[in-house]
Image (cartoon, rainbow, N blue to C red; front, side):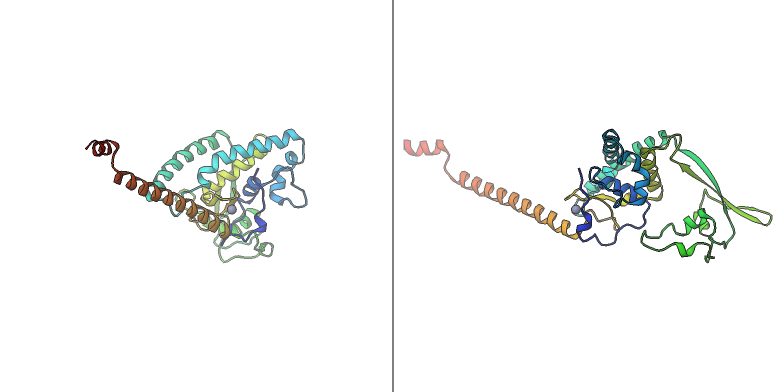
Length: 280
Ligand SMILES: [Zn+2]
């Protein structure tokens, strides 16, 4: 079981961009048997409360769910490091391409329900609509205060950030709207599996899931700010490379001693030569 002791260490430079994947990451690191309601993250508690504080059977359900999710996300969470050769990085990308197709097929088979919403399409709007408000604070880090923005007038309508090739504006008479499609992961029956896979689906659509990592040294899951980061903290980068360098050094030393042994053995006269000499 992975123990969440990341708070004891200095965090990696530049932590998560947003809090949307946080409940998933916290779930992957959660110690089910030591979890306390007082210390549990609010969003995660909403998803797992019934099972986490239920029977042994329901905790086993969560454990199996975590195994399933880790199995689906491990390829993403363990990218090749900066020391990997280009051919290894290309090979890993080909493997992930296959993995993504399998994962997306699984998500499609979960049959989430499509939910349509009408958002105001005007250039400027008050942030008094919960959907528009959610878009206004979409990229906010979890630590940034957002409540003061409620009902204020932003420079531009945050819903306009959704507009692209397939998401257009409806302009009719004096009105403007944007009709969006979202999905409801609580359909037909709400359960943590649907909720976590809903977070995974959203993370794939926004691209943020690509930042999920599992530290090669301690096994903790985290969100990397930089794509190249694969360790949870600086200390673990050093420890891992020191250990790898030591192993490499031992291997080089072994190889060197094997070479010198071979040189000695080839320099040593072969038995038949010796015999000849003895015969002469
Ligand atoms: Zn670590």
